[in-house]
Length: 196
Image 1 (spheres, rainbow, N blue to C red):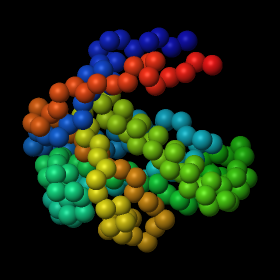
Image 2: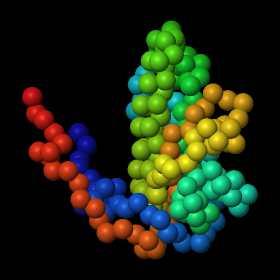
Image 3: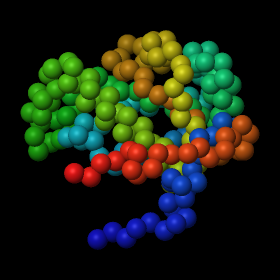
């Protein structure tokens, strides 16, 4: 049996974790991106379909291009962050099922219906985006997840020639207190849960 994480780990991952808007000016090496990915990839997805695809926008040119496709306030955050990751969903994910689910390679046929393929891909890709954030926090970085960008334009600029659709973006680095909101409330258990 596994043991509960200690309070410091729970604070890092959840209780004191914040959405950061300000960042320490730094350049993160590619190895950081690899370390985050190599941790997050172990998070579970349905039939191990692993549909998320990631673009790590770290160059000044890439940041400027992505910033132009975001709301102005988000564009400024993108330009200042060490890296902003575009989390996308590969709608051709069934092609990898024989590799990722080798005990049942015919499982790729489960996703022939386009509507089911899209919903399964989006759901599991979103899970993987959340795993990315938990992995980054686990390795000592802060996150600034965002929507507020032109998905179609981002898909064209960063996923052109593929069947990958952008979901959300997330800046990663060492956060500062710049423009950090006060801790916002959350719903109580009673407001958000039922036990049946």
